[in-house]
Length: 301
Image (cartoon, rainbow, N blue to C red; front, side, top):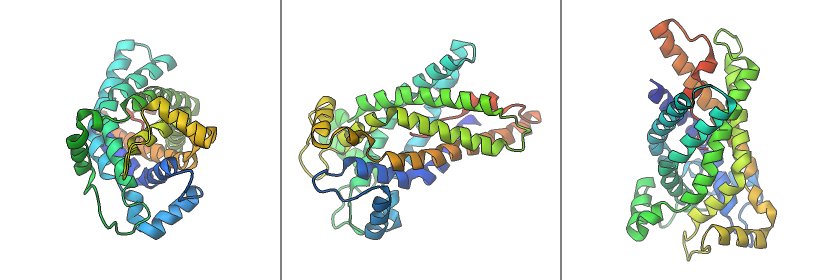
């Protein structure tokens, strides 16, 4: 039941937030010398005008394919970690979330690599004259044939650095907010409270790890349509700072936060309401929504 709830909630979150993620990636990796977009709104406008609405959903197949495995990993690891740690404390919420974030990177990294490559394909073209990848799966297959296992795991280190503390902060923030808001199942305002707690937790998680995400996106997009620019994480950080200054680490942050709130709010509300409905059928209702916290999954980030 938790597995099905996570899949439904995650899918809803992806549908709501993927256009914002496409904008984020385009802004993060565009050339500083010849930028295509002036900002978040201009990027949205340009993609729709040049590539149609479908341009905002490029690469959506990859996160959709990975949701089942990511949700299963997150639920299993987070739930088991909380049982092993015992008491439900803020520290244990952080540690359990961090463990879940760490382990799910095995699926998350290749999934985001394919998503990033697909999002960059045909930039500025309504109908690309030559598509390198037919879909997300074809993208991963081609990368594997050319670069092997190392190729499809490009950006793994930065993904681990982002996801481990990111999931920990997410679960900690959600635990703190739901306790502060008093999310009782009988509360007439439970849905707005869940939306607020989930949305704010997602934003807090992204803000805490966003600079790492910029580097990850640049490394995963490196080599698309030309030679590789970066030799590794340190070289990417050094070149980015030298050419663009510290503001490079906030590029695309606006679209990310605009995405984070509705995505995480939608995911949490969907998952919680589904679980509450299903458990009412089994044991005449859930007494307190906080009892569901260990079953709720943060969106991919």
